[in-house]
Structures are given as structure tokens and as C-alpha cells.
Image (tube, rainbow, N blue to C red; front, side, top):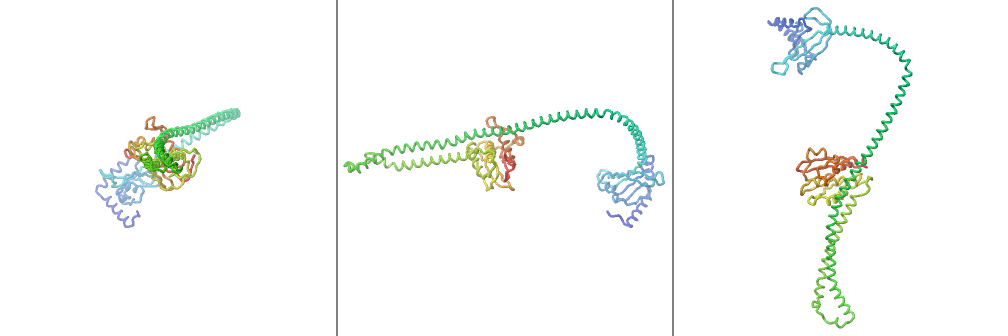
Length: 480
């Protein structure tokens, strides 16, 4: 706010004259001075919301403009109590004359009854000069006492120093011995702690390996049962078709042999062979007429056998790709191709009521340990399928998001309750019966994703389903 001009100051001064001329001013002023008498209050002033002094125990200040005062600004605008420390020569309203005093000026907002908005500001200046002088005197006395005590302490220190100098060498030797012993003890403690840490690290690695092996054996057991079931079906109908083909060929043998004998006689010039025969009467004609149908049936059954063998071959290839022995090497991998093998193996494990669908987009090759990722994704798919009660769908999708490959496993299952969600990646935590889960699948999955420098996110809704999203970098970072 800019300072007022000469005209404004003259107007404020005129207002001050009017205030002092008010009939009740003298009585109110007398009451204020009576209240100040005998106290440490040095000066009292009251300002309106424009910063104009409407009352001051120094009458000459009535009408002054204080709108630029920091204390008035804080109290009037913000409604805060402001206190400042001032020092200087100021006229005394109660004692007269001019004195150098130390004052505390407190600006207090005046609020209308029933309102929090300030209507003015009251300034109370308290004289703290006596207190400061008392503090200074006390400080001087304390300093004098401290000097005396320091002098006595110095003399006593000299005496003690003489005694200390006499036993310094002995104490130095003792101290050196103690320090050496302490060093040896600390060294032994540190080495023991280091051995314990190394042992715990080894045990932790061994535990992780045992966890992974346990989960792998569990998954392998489920896969063996599923693969056996998947292979049993094509094997059964292939065996049946081969048996039926053999029977059909056996049925054609008599007719073919009879026809062959008649052809041999005709070639040899046998007179009986030149005579017309009733082939149907001999039973050869009907047999020969059935041969084309039998051959077509045999071809169809052999085609089914080939189809069953192709199914078994595909399953074996996917199983071989899934169970690659190389678990340490990081290579460039087509994630869509390896996920197809995982989905094929998963279909042999999960319930036939659950459909496992693929929704792959074109994604670049990534550096990864394919064997570890196969295990991780199989765990996610099996968990998703087990979360579905009855019929449902598990969708495995791939995409690229902000320089990372994203693999989604989405199910239409029961969802994960909020109270369980924070613990799903804890080792040995499971809500399944003892014979259905070890509680290691998701823990191992998260560990594998972390080792590949990726992250895993979970979105779930009870009664609707769950979505796991695995983000993997395009290049390997810390894969094991």
C-alpha cells in the first residue's frame, strides 16, 4: 500500500483533533491511564482497519497513519497476534520526559462480537527495560562467578596435571593393551558375523532353489498326469483304428486270393478257367465289390491315426520346448512362440471346462531365460484356471507398452479378496487345500520377473475376475 499524500495526512490529523475533542474522550483516556499506572504497560494505541490511529495514550499520535506497519498488516488482514521488540528514545505518557527504553509491541486483532473478522487492531507496548537490566546484572554476576571458578579450576587442573603426568605412561600402556584386546575381540565378532551372513545367504539361495524345485516337481506331476491323459485319447483311437484296418484287410484277403488263383489258371491255359463261372455263386463277386469301400474305410481310419500322431507330436514338441534343460542361459526369445508352448502344456493340466485363449500381438524379441519364464507363466495360467469355478476362460495376451513387453493373464474367476491381496506373493501363502497348492507358485513367479528386471501388477474384482500384467524389458537386466 503506498504511503498517503500530504492531503491524506492532513485529513487524518483533522480526524485526530475531532477524536480528542469528543466529550467522552477525556474520561476514557483517564481510565486507560489509570489502568496503565503501576504496570509495565508503556503505551496503548488503537487502529481502525485503514491503519488510522483512533486512540493513543500519546495524544499527539492520534490520527497517525500506521497502514504500512508490519504489525498492523498482520493483525488486521490475517487476524494474527504480532509481537515485535523495539529499542529507542520514546516519550513516556505516565512518567514524562524522554527515555531510552526497551519495549515489546503486541498487535492484537479486535473482533466484533459473534464474528471472526477483525474490526480494528489494538497495540500494547510493554516496558521490559527493568527485566533486561536485571538480566544483564545477573549475567555479570554469573560471569564473575564463572571467572572465579575457572581460576580455581585452572589451579586445580595444574595439580591434577602433575599427577596425571606421573601416571600417564602407565595408563598409556594399559590403554594400548585394552585397545589391542578390544580390536581382537571386535575382529573375532566381525569375522563370525561375516561367516553367519555368508551362511545365511547360502541357506537363502539354497532355500530359493529348493522352493523352485518343489514347485517345479509339483507342476511336473500335474503336467505328467495331464499329458498322459492328452496322449491317451489319440493313442486309444489310433489303436482302435489300426485294429479295424487290420480286420478290413483280413476280410479282403479271401476274395483277392480267389481272384488271383483264377487269373493264374487262365494264364496257364486251364480249360476250367476258360469256362464262364458265376462269381457271385462262388461268393467272389460280392467280396470284390466290398473291397473299394473297405479300402476307403481303411484310408479314413489311417488318416485319423495320422491326425492322432500329429496331435501327440505337437504335444511332445511343446512339452520339450517347455522343459528346456538350459536354465542359466539368456537368449533372444520370441515370446509369442514360447507362450504358445506354455498354453499348450497348460491345456493338458487345467480343467476341460476352462478355455485357454490366445490374444497375441506382434512383439519384438527379448533377452530372457526362457525356461524360467515358462515356469512363471505356467504358474499364472494354472492359478487363473483354478480360480474359475465351473466353466470360464483364461486369456493370455501380449502387447508392447512404452518400450516394454506386456504379458497379460486374465481370468473370469472369483477374484481375490482385499484381505488376501497383499499376501499373494508371500512364500507358502495359499488358500487352496494342502493337496492342491504349495503356496510357492506366485512367489517364484515374482522372483523370476524381478530377476529379469521386470515388474508384475495385479487388478482384481471379486466375482468378476483377475488380471495379472507382467512387464519385461527388451534387454536382459540381471537375469539369472
